[in-house]
Structure formats: C-alpha cells, structure tokens
Amino acid sequence: MTHDGGAGAGSGAGTGEVRINSVSNTAFSIGGTHITNTSVHHDGTGAGAPGAEELLEAVRELRAALVRLPRSADRAALDTELDEAAGELEGAGEIRPGLPARLRGALQRWAPLVESVNAAAALGGLLAALGS
Image (tube, rainbow, N blue to C red; front, side):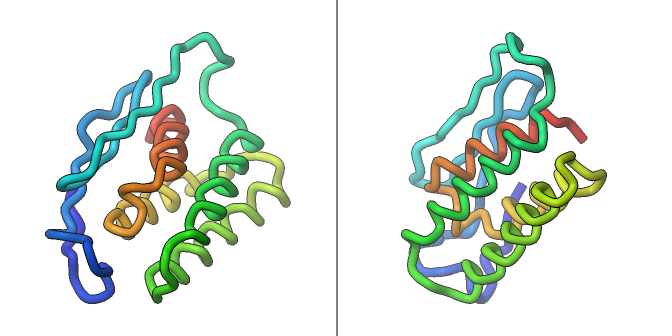
C-alpha cells in the first residue's frame, strides 16, 4: 500500500511510501523507507479479537504519542479522527461496524506521519486481529 506523498505529507516523509509487510491472524508489521519495521504479534492465547477496551487503549496511546510530533494540519486531522474513535468506543462500550475500517484508513492516509510511532503499529496489530 502506498500513500501518494502529496502536500502535507510532512518533512522527512521521503517518498511517502509505507510498506505493510504482512498481515495475518497472528501478526501485523508496518514500516517505510529507512524505518525499522515494528511488529505486533498475537499469540492466539487470548479470547480472540480484541475488545472495545483494548482498542480504546491503543487509540489513546497513539493519540498520546502524536503529541510528541511537530504540529501540522495532518496531525490535527489524525488527532480529530482518533478523538472521534475514542468517543465512539467510550460511548458504545463496543466496536461498532465500520470503526476498524475507518481507523485502518486513517493509519494508511497518514502513514508518513505515524510510520515511526510504535503506538501506530500496536493499533494496526489490533485492527489486523479484528479482520476485515
């Protein structure tokens, strides 16, 4: 998968390409050009797909990690999406249909911004465990 690297991709984003090296029921790995790959593995010993609390925690961790990045329009847009997802998870107490796809889309859309953030890989791993 690639990001077009258009306006707002941010400095240091290189080509804007992010490679998702593998997605399966047990692992998710994300990385880009000159970025060390980070993997999240699910060993199958849990109850299966993550629940709303686990997903909410991952969204909050990514949101907290983004605070350390320089301010930009892309970061503000991603912050907004993550805040909306967190509010939805808090309010419903369950993962509503469509939320995982929206979060996956956000990670892909702002891949150059989050490719070096470990919390993004963790969230990606949970989304991979949820499936399509």
